[in-house]
Picture 1 (cartoon, rainbow, N blue to C red):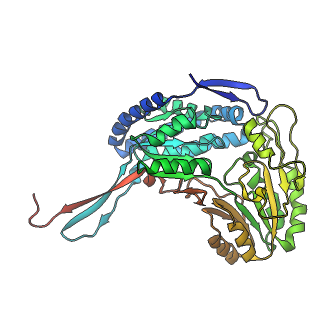
Picture 2 (tube, rainbow, N blue to C red):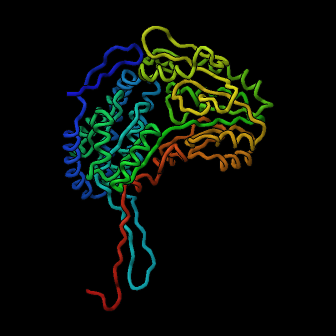
Length: 458
């Protein structure tokens, strides 16, 4: 039997070994989900809503437990982990309103009445990454369940513990057996089987662009819809007319949150040339002030990287001769510790500018004017997120419309909210998650024409 070995990224100690699901176990889980989904879809919308609220209440009672698991398994600072567990509760509560609001339409036609219904897809496969195990899982399973589907979720091999606990809480809250299942295992086994299984009717994947491309190709063979939230190399544009002090003070938290292991991280800071030197003066103390350390300490702002292989990948982008402007501090000794690092590459084609490093490494580049800023921001195969700093409202709107990204913020480094749509352009993804319409994305639209002419059958 294949096992997954889980290490604490803070000190490299063994947390647990857990069995990895096989193809046969995946097939059995899908079969259970098919049965559970049919019964779930027959429930009155109000009953599905009540069940999701009970699930949310169960998560609320386990916030501290879930947070502690995430600290050990993922290295997230305890303050962040508590917020992530509470986020799962909030997402469930938000989508518990959806079952009673999946409204169809009445369309004017001649000779009768035409109406649409939003029917559940069936079984949904959700494949999640290791960087935000709880929150990203909830973005898939909450709206899918609300729409009347069953969910089989495959968490990332490195960080399955909180997802497994969420599945237990679902059962404890009263959700039917088989409706929401979590299968830890290898992507090439469990994930691949979910994508190819004929009874899995949709795939939701968050992860690398390379894997997303492979999933999209395999799903196409089955004409299976996919939602893909993939890589990012987001730009943070700082204009000379902005509040430079605030832009510099918040920039580290747009990059180094979760140790830079965030597809939305603003890892390219573009600064108007006339303000470049002053911005760098302000940025240095902000970066050096980021508190890196024991994730169980409430004062910690940044923990370790998730694993040794990922540490080695990030470190490869900062060799001894790298153009390091300044760095923060990080603990020494066991654990995958990497300091917040600011680079000033001489070329916009440097791989630190073009590649998704997925660690606490940011590049700072100057631009000449608004058109130059937009050109540099869009000179990327990615288009997920970004920020714009300016005191001019018209510029904020104009530049937002010109940047090829799915989620932007003006005068803020925060842009992801469960109440608003989220997703990317270009190689950053396909489809949208979150927001008031997310549950509709887990339905099929059925059109029904009812003849009401005199000759119609009574």
